[in-house]
Image 1 (cartoon, rainbow, N blue to C red):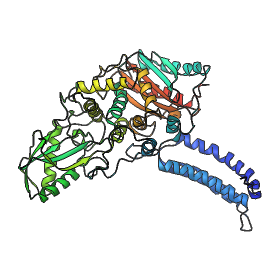
Image 2 (cartoon, rainbow, N blue to C red; image 1 turned 180 degrees about the vertical axis):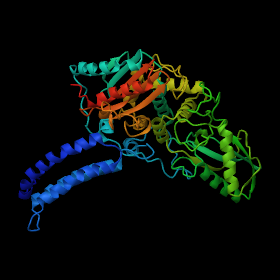
Image 3 (cartoon, one colour; image 1 turned 90 degrees about the vertical axis):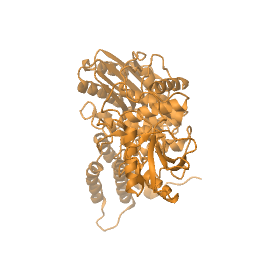
Image 4 (cartoon, rainbow, N blue to C red; image 1 turned 120 degrees about the vertical axis):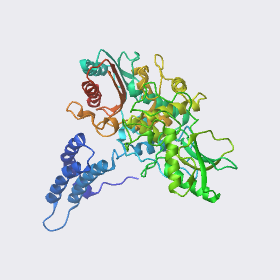
Length: 545
């Protein structure tokens, strides 16, 4: 059926075209300079809407079709810009739900979904919406990215990156790689097979291995169990590094909720007095990271609340409890006493629950995909080490530093990734003996974006966003770095002398690129970080033609 073009529309069309040409450049400039304050766009666009409205208002009090269309078009553009900013792409927690939910809608493969349990978390962390081209280009379901550049474009990209990566602040050792995610073609390489210390970009490998082995829908369970015929109550850790005892725990597993349910269950059994112990036996081996006591990581245990932090921080360095498992049990005992249960052992001792112990109550973490996002956004070392151990458990290894490292390496190899030359000693990248290549890091990112691996998508959606979230929230502020704001999504890595950056970027042609920059021997961390940010920003502004 052919629908004829109506005469009023033909008359309105030139007016709409002029309005669109006038408004679009202004919106583009606003989008480039945007910070996470929706008010900026509103203030910039409102005058244009008012001017157009005044210009087309008829003197006799009636609007013609072209005038109505012009006002509607202008207001529509303004509302779209305002809505996009107000909706995201970032919320206060640094998570990006729209992307994760959208990815989940594409496919829910891998892992076991325990969401049907009665004691499952009522809600999961809500990530904010993200730029459509990032994931659209990954899935291939909507053609928003272009094909790989032709051969003549490669020297252009090389000339841009060679100059930027030749910065003396980066130190004497540096490697790099850039890959077109849609095609897998390497667009740039600089000693890309040379293994260097990756620092926290190791977490990308840990994320991919855990998502692959454990599954994105898996939830970690913390239980309160009662030994049959006794008053012996045990708090059993399920290796949930996000368990919280704080009053406002959000969607994370809540120790207070567990105390509520446990007290109710004890009352139903007629028990008002218990002897409390705890079971953290799920993880094995040494619990102290090789770097020793350090504010960047707690002792790695299957039972902890708020990562053993002794302050009210939620991320970053903080003083930690000397025994996070025992501290979590003491906190649980205090919560039970507040609910009328007499707890015999205020300083609970370690024990192991028997197979016959009855579960009185439990709480679950959000899905692993949400936990991975938090780990990557905040560069959370405690979560990373827990995920390495869960990867070990899922693949039949001991849940120790050694078992976790071996499990991550083996899992990546089974995915067909180029692990030659790599060496894993932990899951967080705090160990300076870790070694990764730029080739492996870009392969990890490209695989996470592949339509054939939707279970790995959180390894992309969790990456910090330049100028907005996580460890990139306070970067990309200088002029040469600003083109990367909102377009660069990357995992940072920093140790003394070591500076790394690996992630994705949408370039000027709308293509999704995966990149990895590893450097070693820098004497100026601030300058080195800025140099890496400039390189990533250059990718965002380069059409590579």
